[in-house]
Image (cartoon, rainbow, N blue to C red):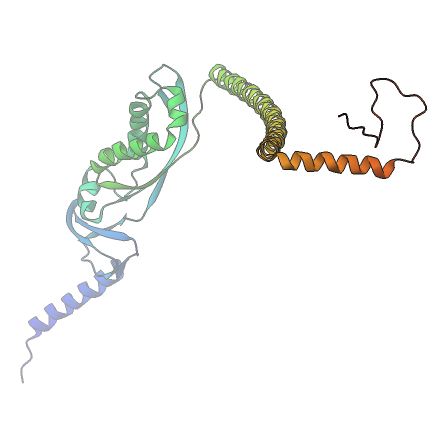
Length: 293
């Protein structure tokens, strides 16, 4: 059997190229939380998810991060609506949207790091939001300010193919003069509240004393009224009793005569049998009665 050495030669060349390609450009891996951007001559050929892949020698693999990243913005500066300079520090956590990898790779970042864009957008947003509030409102409405910063920043970073995960904002800092004025005002407010509380306490004590005095006076009056009422009732009852007795006596003269006889009998029982030594002309003689005919 005749062997075609030309095919054998081409097969050997192909095998050699394959071996050489494998040596020069071995098996590649796209880590978890990343995407592989495959380029040929600088142009994007495709996006590869996590896992293994083989590349041709003329292809290049770019590892692109789609995990959460953190941008720290120190001393972001702004000015309030009442022209008070204010600063704060923010931590912005973000990530590139997986469906925006090619766009971000071409226009903004080759590896998914957008810290510089996030920092600039955060600074601009902070200035725009703080200009809507006075200095006292920034302190009193911190949650509202934070929410508005987050809302506006999400719109800005969407232009870069990213989305905001969360924002941590530290305390606001104002000028020394303004902070001294705030502290002084807070001190005066505390003193005012303490004075008001003292007044309220004294007023409450005075009201309590007045209430106790009024209660005692009311109780004494009630007792006096009760005693007077009781005395009136007793006097009225006695008067009524006398009226009843007088009426009874007036209506029954025999009772009067019976009372008179009872009195005379009591006198007779008490007489010792001796006549008085001095008898006046008008004085009656006991038990001596001379009928005149």
